[in-house]
Image (cartoon, rainbow, N blue to C red):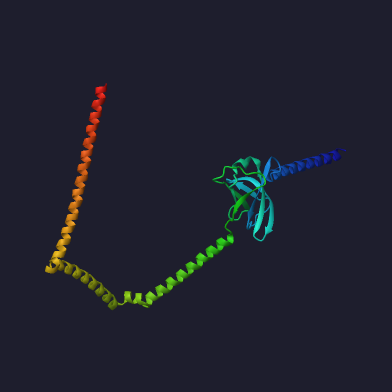
Length: 264
C-alpha cells in the first residue's frame, strides 16, 4: 500500500511539473506572438521579403513591438506582409512611417524594422498600410565586392605591365627616363623656352624705348596715372562728404538737446 502511494505521489509531481512547464511555455509563446494584451494590425508591400518568415520580430526604434502575422504573395513583384503590433506603440507610428527588412546580425534571422516618419502627425490606424523600402540583398553586396576585386585585379595587372615596360626600356616614357640623349634634348628644349621668354621680355622693354612706340606707352602710362588719381580724388570726396554729414548730424543733435533743455 505504501509502495502504491509512493508511485501515485511521484506521478502527481510529474504531472504537476509538466503542467507548469506547459503553461509557462504557452505564456511566453503567447507573449511573443502578442496573443495577450491589446494589439493592432498593419500591412506593407514589398518586392521581395528576403527570407522573412511568419513569427519573425517587428522592431521600432530598436525595440521588439510585434511579430509577422501573415505573408501573402500577390504576384511576381509584390508581397504583402501583415504584422501584429502592441497597441501601446501605435501613438508613436505615424502614417508616413516606412517598413524595411534587415537581418538580426550578420547571419541572424530576418527582422522587419519600422522607420519613424518625419512630417506626418497623424497616428496610424488599425489595418492601415505603410510604405516600404527595399533592403540591400546579400547577392547585390557580393556582386559589388566582386566587381571591386575584379577592378583591383585589372589595375594591379596594368601596373605590373607598366613596371615591366619601364624596367625593360619599352615605351616613350621609359626611353625618356633611361635615354640620356633624349633627356638632354628635353633639357635643351626647356632652356630654349626659358631663353625665348626672357628675350620676349627684353624686346618689350626695348619697344617701350623705341621712338615710334614711345608715345603709345607714354600715353598708356599717363592714362593709368589719371585713373589712379581719379580714384584717389573720389575717395577723398567721399571721406569729405562723410565728415560733413557727421558734423551736420552732430550740430542737429546739439540743437535738439538745447531745444529739449529750454522746454524743461
